[in-house]
Image 1: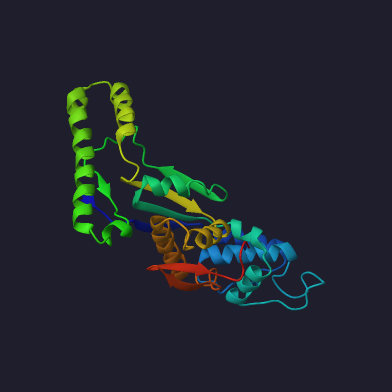
Image 2: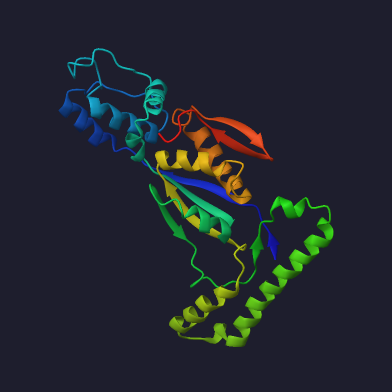
Length: 263
């Protein structure tokens, strides 16, 4: 058994093909337009917003005589006017490591605007079981006795998996199909709390909603912990896009709040 801490890696983001964007801007008559956005996702949202109103420059649309030139101010207006559809274009790509299957069972309930790829226990045989311990166990008045009980249970589950693998002779099986069949069956006896890995991608509109819902004090503790780490990364990396959020520490976790809910 190994005690672990959930980890969040931001490994990818939507990139703009600048040469194709230039061709479009020439086509629409805005070849001189430039954005001061610090990242491609923030720039992409600006492009998609401006094309809706042909607002790359004054006069391009006769109804538009003044434009917001600063990306931060432009996205601020997008957020406050709840023009959420243009925020669905970029995607952020994460790998969430050492999160429990309790966590993954909950995060997959958010299906709109996300993509999910999870470590498969049909193929990945369990040996060392990794666990994150909830604070209610770690902070309990009788934590020493309680932790001994919990560790004993996890160690039993771990030994059961390795004994079962030896009894079935998985290492000697030549047929991968047969090995996969037994590995898949064995996972049914593994606890939901074991740590796993999941690839998770979300567009900014979906992510904003998840940040608000899953950092709320009523959410499950591990969910609050992991979503808080995601929120910390995107607020630092894309400050214009998440500029309206305020934080409040509640029960040792940050709660992310905005007056612009459900953009």
